[in-house]
Figure (cartoon, chains in turn green, orange):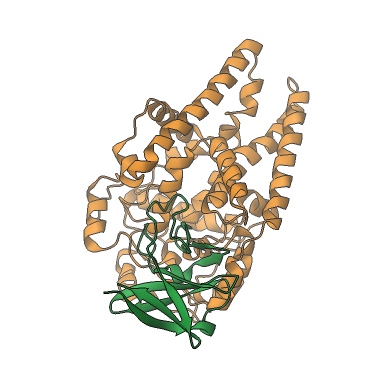
Length: 104
Length: 358
């Protein structure tokens, strides 16, 4: 059953940036895009187990800090070597200044 | 004495996986996110400027070499051309491969393809090989890019100053890949869905070299090969000179770049040719930081790093004797001393002092 989980405050993420959110043994990356929208993906790169929250957000791309693998964080699409497997994405919404993500 | 097996399918690699040394978590100096973001920021400006200078001087020196071909006056032109081709090709391959040189993706891709061709590396194979190098830096049996293995093969090192063995091995790999064959080692780090690209690009490179050789035969002159192909040999010297310093003589099988990588302060010309990879500890610790921001990164974290070698000469004066000692004792390595302001190496790294001779 999918549930909405409060991840962080909306103002805890800078524009065009990402933060890490851990929940019940899982890790997620929460993004704030340049146009002030929020997105969520799995927190680890699909190439190797590296936290994407240490990476660089450019427009709609998150770049992994270890090997520079790039994903579209809005769709999860892997954008080329060394990442070949797409990133899982999660719905988000903002309520009362808090970012919620739906995980199942 | 530990016997090292550098074969990617060998015993040392298997042991590294079993012990958790492979794909391990590495030490990083703490940097506030805000500062890290500033350092990681991408911009096209510095790399556009440097690439314009690089390609411009390549074109001018090639023109001078061709103009004066047949006289001794061509020598200085080919010296410049070869160095920018056989050595800068390496650094451009490297930095554009990381995707950090330019903000604009296609610019990185174009320079990566040019650099790969110049330095005679299959751009697909080496993208994956370099990813492994960053995952398992100088982990024996895992890192496919260890330049000097133990005990050191010093003849191989010397021959590579003119690219002899590297080019020979490239030609073998090029022929094999063009025939559609990948080695077991290549398959160990290149995912299946990427392998057809290795073959495709090998055939393109082979076709260019075949056309160049055909032109040389038709002209009855070495000149076409002086422009394409041979500069990988006569211009390799600077890439080897600087590249050996990256990890040479330092620890292996550790997970702290402060122990297995070397930062060396260099003159501005070498830094241009090398695109600031003299800041090698910093690059390995934070591969997301573009080459032009590495001096700033160095200034920010030098309190936590071993003191840099103040010159290439200084680096060679410690590295060459270490190579010579490794001929007798391959467990010997140079242990990097940390300043009092640095976070200490973790306990397992302190144990290395037992292995390090004197």
